[in-house]
Length: 183
Image (cartoon, rainbow, N blue to C red):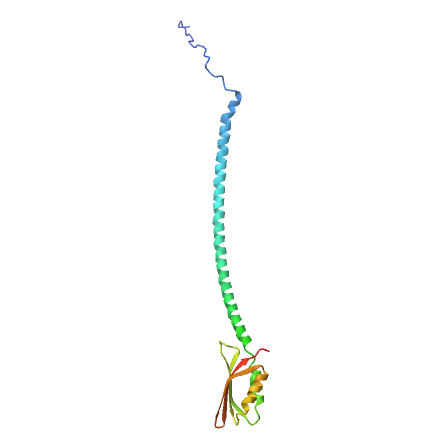
């Protein structure tokens, strides 16, 4: 053995702390567990974010589809409203018209057998459908047939307005505006 002697020059120190308790051995384990949990939750959040982005894109596409469908339905509705407006205008026009056949029959029956009607014209104005322009041309007639025409038309609830009669030789012409009279 060696003759060299090693002396321990350490002196006892009172300012040193004590040894850590045994429960502190869990700190590194908890650090790794928390690190793994953090990594797991970051991965889960990224995956959820991607899924949410897909859902957002799908909902935006669905919104665009619904907007296009709504636009198409609005166009169809406007077409239907336009057709409805036109149909109501036609209905008003038809409502304003009365069947013209009874007028022609009434005028024909009011004439005596020796009088011939050469022309009978009933025209309606698109602006005023309740008014009918009447033109009757007769041969072998006298001016006395005009009140018969007016009487026949009055029985059908029409009133003659601004009637004009003219006689040219054997032909008598009667023009008038027929206005529907409400009962």
